[in-house]
Image (cartoon, rainbow, N blue to C red):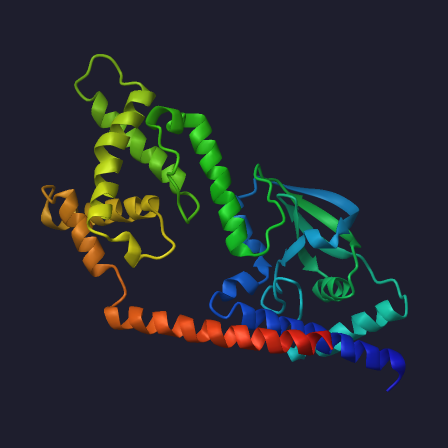
Length: 316
């Protein structure tokens, strides 16, 4: 084995070990260590059209995902499987010999890049600390600009923050209600709320000669629909049964559940009963919650120890 082959083999082993270490660090939240799928992002951002841009020099740090190979690499583009070794090492050998490879092909959306062709070249470039790479770019148009997300949960959070800014800006919801913490953990929820307000406005207008203003409809919905539900959620101490969820999440879920109850039992089902039933039936059984609690403690301790050990090994 010559020096270049040996160096390429060592480079792959280092990159593979980093992927393993990253996996261990995110054992409890594997989605945070996963490479972002272009299809998942397109479903969230719903780009309007596609434009061929041509050749560009692309910052490596802006390449955050892949069209088809997102299961082969982690969110840092380190290889997750040994079956990638041969092709990865051949690309690394070319880099070591200063052989110029063809440009990669990428999609650009919201300021980020996703690999169409050239995943191994990106992986090697990231492992070698390369800052830029030649790429043939096709742009997917979207109003939302994303700021260096680390993973899919980070993208979702940024999209939700954008949706909240748009909702509050276009409806003046905060100024009208003096309520600035209508928050969600899933995208598209502000559209749901807007439709609820429009429906509420429709019913308010029934039998009236003068149309109810949007501001009055928002305030009425907030005081007579939203607040009673979230107040009942607080009084029933339900939120702690749904970790990492918000009052806004609970409102959307309970309204849907309430509608299903009314379809089954009639329109007279009171909202407080819907909240109680929801809290009773939509939660993990007690034994599973206890098991998950102690499992998290044990795993976090194990990960802490392993992380310290692996950190030393990886730097050797």
